[in-house]
Amino acid sequence: MIPHATQQLSGWGRTPVTECDVYRPESLQALEALVTSDEQPNIIARGLGRSYGDASVNDGGGVVLATRLNRMLSFDADAGVVTCEAGVGLDELVNAFLPKGWFLPVTPGTKFVTVGGAIANDVHGKNHHRDGVFSNFVAWLDLLLADGSVLHCSRDENADAFWATVGGAGLTGIILTAQIQLLQVESAYMKIDSRRCKDLDEVLAALSESDGRYRYSVSWVDVLASGAHLGRSFLANGDHASRDDLPGNTTNPFATRDKRKLAVPIEFPSWALNSLSIKIFNEAIYRTHPTRNNQIESYDSYFYPLDRIHNWNRVYGKRGFTQYQAVFPPDQTEGIREMLEKLSAASLGSYLSVLKRMGPQGEGMLSFPFEGYTLTLDLPFRKGAEPLFEELDRLVLNRGGRLYLAKDVTTKADVFQAMYPRLDEFRAVKAKLDPHNRFSSRQARRLGLCSNGKAAN
Image 1 (cartoon, rainbow, N blue to C red):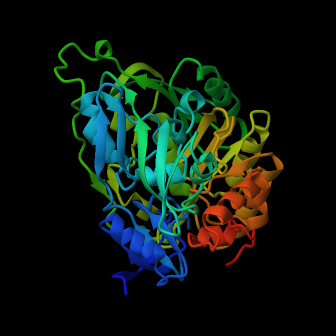
Image 2: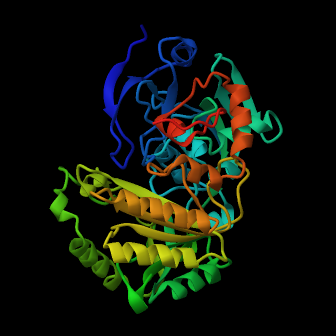
Image 3: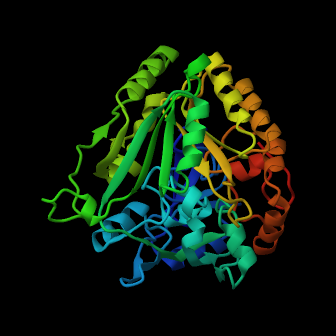
């Protein structure tokens, strides 16, 4: 028997909690032995557990923690090209290479994500309108298949496997190594222009207008605002600060002052999360963020404001939450308005609600973003909320939008499958690489992502 522990696991949203057999291989040989053994009916890789739903849990099967397979293999200091194992965290890349003048080309809202997780979810960030998805900067990857062989994949070699793995939620195999192009920067600071937007029309226009002027753009949205204030927002556009942008007394442009880490030590009680507390929080955020130009702040504050709060997901209590993320085509922004109206009417607020402009569709078969606008909402699970979630799903589908695999935990299989036109192409590649569905997850079975197309509970 291969050593393992039976544990209760969930995604970052803390629901559903499932019992899984958890393995933590510390060498490629141990990983290969696990993949090719008959000990588990199926397995799924898991990095740092920051996907929100059930993408990296596997009730009745195995979960492979990849965080010990995290070696840096090589770095070209002139070109900014790093080759590393998939268990390397984005935080480790930043810590190692930002002092040398290189930053992540694309980053999600947390740096506590592994390289393998970033590829498997084809993550995007505040610069999608300019730079696209993470896979745009992945030159190649090595993929461990179900038979124990390793497949070298790139745009030119085994391209079908490459584009199925990118955004494929770990269902084609286990990513072992990858080569990534980093972004050259002159400092560890950002130059930010920010403004308040009084309603949805104003923030949508501002996001569209800022596309060509800023590398990064993101807006926080007050979900509980209604009427003439529906969609009121705080918009923060940014670029990497040059040396000349920094104060004259700056001696090291890559040194930042560490902020004191905070923590949520306990689960918040259910009564603490209500429309009044969320309304007060949203009002405070809006009022304390005035219009400012050329403000200098650290990369950490701009990209990762929640990373300094340990276990912040406990705020949503024992029932947990879902981070609901949808993208709408540029001519379907009324779908965003309808969604905000439904949430406001239901008093289902969100502490963190983000609206961004998206660029062109990526090439990954199940890659989430396409050109338009994406709205992200942290929505608590509460009694009777399921019909509202289903209503939101149908709204997104009817408006030509789609939902993000890395966040989803509630969507029905038929709705999800209708959102991804290349799903059958993905299934065909998975069937070729993994004919016995060795790689599977609770989410894959729930949504029918495997070749037989059947959804299971």
